[in-house]
Length: 257
Image (cartoon, rainbow, N blue to C red; front, side):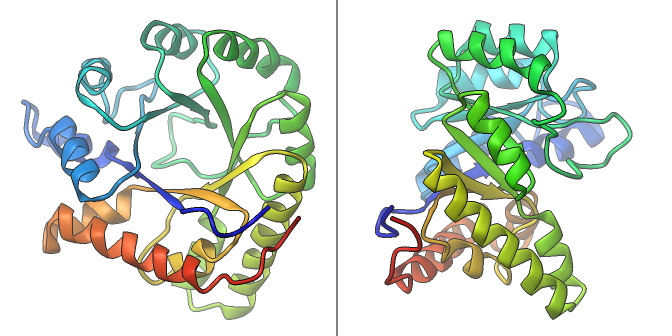
């Protein structure tokens, strides 16, 4: 696989809704943020409808489906309720993620291997509805094998441990996590999976990930919304887009064939 393809940027607008919900009412509007993100260079919008509706609401999903001209990536837990909502709206893509009520954010990858039988029928129903299914997983060969067994076309690698090590200044751990992500991206691409990555990426951590030639898309949310407080959403997204493009331009040799 060549590393010359454009690396797509998916912008997660969940935490615009978090700010809205902190006070109640309608502002700030996550749909407005999604439209601004698309204008600024986002190739798609990600929204996670959690079971407790702590940020994105059902109404947000309806309005996003009506308003967006770029693809919507609908993040969801593997539950009958979320499956029904996805099948009703039929977004471009669904990313199945792990979800626990007590967590502040998604804390790790989905155990696709351990949940294979439960996921199989759900993945099949989504695929039958022409929804592109991805799984949010750790950079683990066992999880890659499970993804191929489930016949999903896409996986998103969890970059959280890499970003946490970078933030802590632990270069050894960061290097180890980057190597895991590198190998998983190569192996997954070799298995026919389209490789995405995301979680915790910032201006300081994105370049080594964006340089991985086998990745097709990065999904970034919390950091961009936080930085937008200081520099505006348009400028923040454009800077991230530039950093990604510069890192990809330096990837001269394909990492797999």
